[in-house]
Length: 261
Length: 261
Image (cartoon, rainbow over all chains, first blue to last red; front, side, top):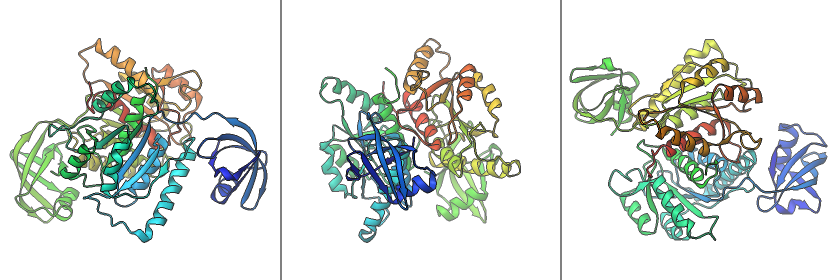
């Protein structure tokens, strides 16, 4: 069943009003009629099944049929911190990582980021990214829309590292140079430590991936000093837009999102 | 160091001749000069470091500096069987899965494949896919270029299932319907069984992912009867082009490609 995210204020008592792009999607793309049912989520605490009562122009009015349990969220809350890549690669990262189950995104600048971040265009770009994240969350049946933060500087990102239960820094040279370990080693160690603390069943993890040129050695040193673990993602060189997708898949796999004991 | 794949016949004694697109890449894109060094692989058994001796038009002549050990290949040989998706999604799948470490690709048709496979355009499409796989193998520093098979019918794919040590069938309804298990459960079981057979340290795994509409229930039943295990990739709905990327990442993670014990 098709899923739409609305603002909590669009739900009034038993009635929901959907307008703008989502109304267009319901009427023109899905060609639904009055009587059709969809899933509506407020992107936070509430998910319901709703029936279309009335379609008028660009506004669709629905009534709630039943409350639904929330069930599609990962137990580990993973934030993807991504060094700003060139072109439309950030869009691919956000779309795929939303499907896979990321909790939030932090774009950031670092030494080897090539794109000039244009503050005039910032609002427009954030708006476009938000739209991609929302649509991917709807299509993949997420209960929440991942949060999207405004681009941070390298120093701002460093300052955030200690606030996470685990911070992983994707470093091409991890392993080769005798510093850093594989992702699996880091996660196994984290799980063992976590077993001692049964209160924390929603650990927060920060996965830091670089831009096309990777990270400067100085940045790896600074991240490690701030508490991040330098990790490798295997012996092959992954493109900037691939590391986050692969790392997130493996983190959620290890957390038990894909079955297993 | 930049890596190029050549045909074995381009290596004669101590000399290598690179022409066409790769020569263009060396001269125009990388702007290398005589004396520069690159890695050259024959895509099969041999990888060498070579120095550029001479650049003439669209031909670059190199001499071998040293033989290199092969080291970038995954212990588990994973074949991605992908139901033909719309648009250019197959290109994304092939590029990303080559980076991550797939051994080969089998595109196939099934009930819900929407694209009309045009035999006239087949040669051109295979050529384009081959180019993408080769370039991704070069950029990610693979020792081998993954093999790319011609598109198969559903029946042809079914017949191939028993030839793999493990065949995994990505099925959205696995788990929900009480049949099928999570990917992690299937891999853990496979590893336990594998420990009994120490001769087989390069197991072959077939990962089958569907087109946009997923698989018909009949197809899941047929795949299971042929020996495939129906698996889920978590509670979120992944797009057609995402399932293979996520599944491959997790399989190689479980195989120990990203460290761990």
